Image 1 (tube, rainbow, N blue to C red):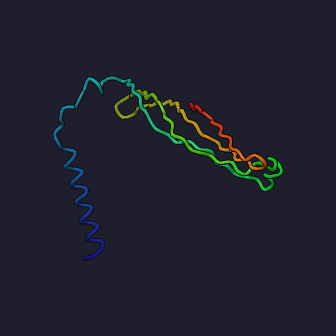
Image 2 (cartoon, rainbow, N blue to C red):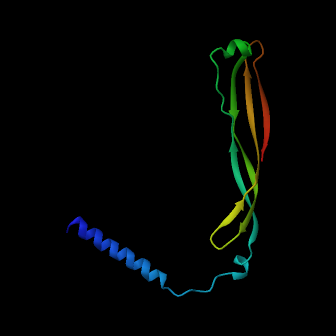
Image 3 (tube, rainbow, N blue to C red):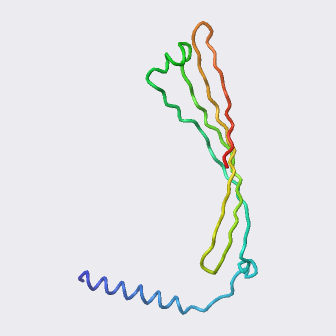
Length: 129
């Protein structure tokens, strides 16, 4: 079989499927009273994970002092809360607005060395809108 015959056969099949689907009987719309309203509201909950990306400079020991050995970032899990608002101004076009607020926190661990070796943990909390 040549490629032209295969292409013609597949095109005829696809066009006939499309024509057949256009003549399917219309069924009743599920929850017509809901879809008839132009404005809809909802909400959603989500989970996020926040972290710092730490990059060092070449002379970080002289800038930070001799006792700072390292800085580490511990990621933490937070949550999102959002509102979904949708306006259907006709059957085929809608405008959706999805504002979101996210809460998260991270921990920075500062490791110091010297006469007294100690660590400091600083918690940084963030809220994003």
